[in-house]
Image (tube, rainbow, N blue to C red; front, side):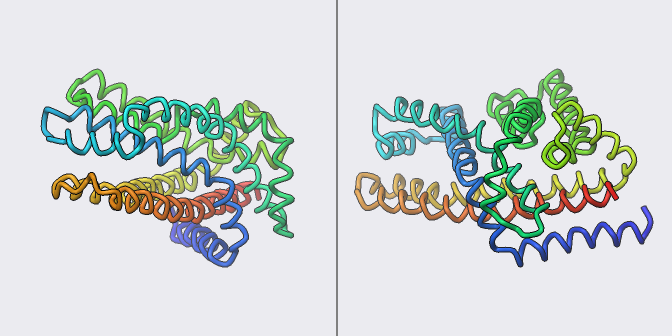
Length: 295
């Protein structure tokens, strides 16, 4: 890649960063439209960590007291039923909200007047195509892959050759989609195409601009580290409180519960806002790349 092309790509990233930092309305839009999705993902991660703890109990970690404390914190014996009901309600939002949110963001960026309410209002006509595309791409989501790999690690299957081959093959497919399908959502929303047509056109644009597509796919994965940061922020503070509460034998104190509840609420809101900023940057970079390869 030439120095001129490298400078051009760096300029796109810098412009996207400046745009996001100067456009608080867009950050509010991304935060609002992705808020529930962010919360659902964090709840899912909490469940995953809880499951990991159970898998490890009696093997390498002595966490019986911590498990008992978590069960008491969220409702004792009824915690499972409550989580099932909550999970069923949130699952609806998990699958229905992303198509709305992403269409709204794309409309906003393409609307020079930057009317957030208009952007949200225009999602209806693109809901079903975006929903269909999300369904197609669920298997190729990098975060889903991360969860998939962590589950195999918990089960102690990472030394299985067949498992490694399957994971590598799946990763290659995910990377392929990241390189060749990044323009699909913009084509669906802005050019009124259905998913299969948009996928074909995205692959054509990516082939014509292969180096740029590969580079920005790599950048995209680097930025996905924000998910790991979110997990550490969200679970780190309450996790330390639970750990020290059990170690100091003060877990029965009611004020500990209030501290944990408060920590979860504050950290959840902060994490959602950070997610909104990062998502705004993601979408802006992709939009600028899309307009560049289309020109």
